[in-house]
Every structure is written in structure tokens, then in C-alpha cells.
Length: 482
Image (tube, rainbow, N blue to C red; front, side):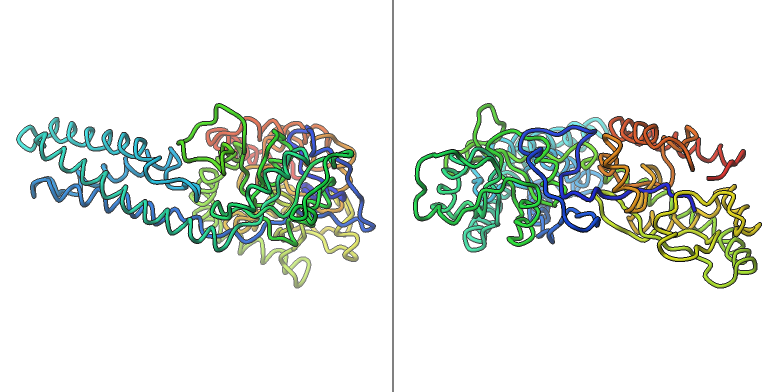
């Protein structure tokens, strides 16, 4: 089998972004005695809490519609209003308020978006049928009811969240200079209603600074990525609060599954109530490749599910050929490295039976191996041996388009040799990719593949995925194999 796959570096450091390291993320990193990669830890994520506020928006629209005439209760009117309100509130982040945000702080944002939705609905009804035009008094009553209900119910929901946050604060690491981070940690400890419980500081130890108070004595300062990794696991850390900008560490904590916040500073957007005891408080959005993932995943499901169903006869014929030529064990399973270093089991049709597990894990290329049967050689040249990976795509292990996944042994080696190789793991690995449609398959330059893969991630779009899939399909007409 060819090893077009991806793995994790053996040192416990952050996954860089296109070969870039910065600030505290470049702190000293310790090697473990084993060559086994240290994978990012992702704690079990709590419920997002979006659904209750989405339901509140829907109920507010229905309550407002009660003031309209019976003719206006047509779903063709109400459903667009509901959809528009949900989209506007969702894009403004109103479905994910911080625990300390108050309903009155959000009232202008809620009222303006509700006004836009109802006015557009009224204009649409009037344009469609002037006889059904909504009168100004009815429209005003519907709008006022909507805003009043959503404000009151949101106030109750947010108040409950504040009580829960106080009773069950979330463990957090504070990133910044030790002195400033300790001041922030002390404020958070004195005001548990904000739901933040600092358990450590990520930064450079202070040199002969002021003595710590008794309450601060147990708060450790973490100076290596290994210490961060251990602290996240041991304390079930769910939040990282940044007093200083550090893109490298922001990416690292987001890969651990933590919510990242920016505390302090000026010119931060948000309502007056978005603060943590006077510290400006703003969520740091994940990188573009993370925000785009839902659309990419939707494309994978829409295309991979019917493709797998249509390919079923071909899969059965390939399985029969492998069984007759090489005996039992039609499928070949191998550990590969996926997004953010997660290991998964990749599926292929078996085209060669390795002598042992060590050969399977560390041999780079078996093209031309005399042990390969005629059936195996045909499957490799036509890339039909890759078809079972459609199941990996449906499972979410892979995407249709992305950097090809590699074995842990080779990822550890390539990450030490090629700058930016580990950055390929920012996006889900793929069945095909930009490097592959440019002929970079099999025994070709790893440096070139790495460059193509990072270029693909930095300039990703759904249309580019479609183009790569079409070019891959065209390439099957003139197969060269791997």
C-alpha cells in the first residue's frame, strides 16, 4: 500500500498554522521517551444552550402573530419571519450569550432585528396581495408582543444560567503575564457569579515580582506545552482566557476543544454587560477552517452517501476479486492520523498482505512488489482499492477532499523534516486533494504535497472542492495508480 497519510509529531507541541509559531506557543517543549505522538485532548463538550433561546424566538413570533388577522396565520408568512429572526439573531451571537450578559443589554439588538423581520414580512404580504396588507396598528402590536415576550423569557433563561454558572464554574487557564494573570484570577475567584474558575496561568514566570497572597499560592504557572496538555486533562479545562494576543496558543486551545476568550483591552464589540468584573469580555472565533466545516461536512454527506450506494456493485466485484486472488481478509485496516492528530482506522481493499505489522506501519511504498497479485495491481492502478474510504467519509473520519492521511510513523518523521507539515492537520483529511490532482501521489515529493495541502486549506471554498472532485473523476479515465 502507498502511504499517503498523516500523523502527529512526537513532541507535545501545538499544531502550527502554516509553519508559524508565536509568543508563548513557542515555549520550550519536552520530549517524551517514546516516539508516540501526543494527541490534542478534547474534553466532553457541555450542551451549547442554543436550543432554549431558539425556541424563545419561535414562540415570540407565534405570540406576535396572535395580533394579526386569521388570514395572516398562513405558514407562508410566519415561517419566513421565524427563519429571518433566527438567522439575524444567530449571526449576531444572541443565541450564545455569556452567563453574565443581561437581557436589557441585548434589548437594542433584539428589537432592531425583530423590527427588520416584521417590516420585511409586512412589505412582502402587501406586495403579494394588497388586500391582505397588515395595518400599522396590528403590525406594531405584533412587534411589541414579540419584543416583550422575548425579553422577559430570555431574562429568565439568562438568570438561570447565571445561577448554574455560580454553582458549577468552568475550569479555565489564564494566558498572559504572570502578574496580570494573577490579578484576573483573583477577581474571578472573588466573583464566582461569572462562572470562571482559574486553575492555572500560561505564561512566563515572573522574575522577583511582588509576593503572592495566600489565595494565589497554589495557582501554577505553566511554561511548556506539555504542562498545558497535562493541566487541560487533569482539570477538565473548558475555557482559555487571553489577556495578551497569541494566535498560536488560541489555535492550540481551540484544538483541545476549549472556548477561547479575550479579556481586557479596548474597542471590543458587544453590549455593556459583556464584561468579567470590569474586564472587557469577547469570544475569540475559531479559525476560518473550523467555521467552514459544517458546509464541508454537508457536501461530504450529500455526495458520499449516494456514491457509496451506486458503487455497491463495484465494491462487491472488487471484494470477490480480492477474495479469489489473495484469500480471506478482503479489507485492509490501517491506523492513520486525521484532523488535529486524531487517530482513526482507514479502510482499503487488500492488495498485498504484509509480512508483519511493522512492515505495514513503516514501509513507504509497495508499488512493484512481486507479492502483489494481478487483482491487487489492477485495483491499485485504477484506485478502486480506495473505494471503501467512502465509509470513512460518512463516519466523519475523513472528507471527500483534503490532505491525504498518513500513518503515525511517517507523520512524526515528516513533521520534523518539513516546515508546515503538521499544519496540514488543520482540516479533515481527504479521499483526494489538490496535491493528488496535480500528480503528487505515491513516491513523490513530500515538500510539494505539504505546500499544495496548506495552499488548499488557506484558500478553501466549496466550489474548489467540487472542482477537485471533478478533476479526480476525470483522472480516473487515465489511471496511473499510486
